[in-house]
Image 1: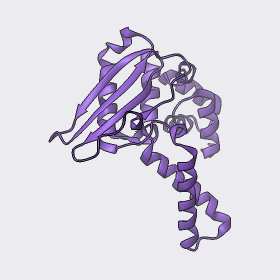
Image 2: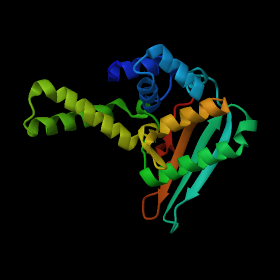
Image 3: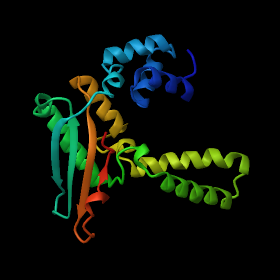
Length: 212
């Protein structure tokens, strides 16, 4: 059995577009055999998700969620390709789950690429200063900093956050499984989270994906 390395998982993910966890499981199931792992992912319906990810999403729903006690509320727009899919119970459930995720985990951005470069660089500087202050050798500092940056993205980016109903999946992985199952591209385009006592966000302060 071949060692299931991070590089092997990355290669499978690049080939199929499936999530990291699913790629790792497929490789473990096939003893590290790349071709067999691709077949497994195809059987699971995940390998086709990447092909659909570039397709235009002009339909969808705006979902809402009010947390118990009515202290936190969320509006979220989730898009798909057709009005037919937007009306399905499975898509409506996904929109509701994403609204709950935003309420519970308070992401600031949708994807990593939505985080402004200056914010990422500032976080990198902070973490590097922390690592050096902890006495870590400079030659390992960069690797530690990148690990902490990954944790930062996990905290602030919706797609990187562990899904609140199943933390073995990220929200991004959840969306990929729905793309594969439903057969249409699905994207989160924007959300806004309100909390009693907080200042009301300006219209451009809500997390929003760039429009093409």
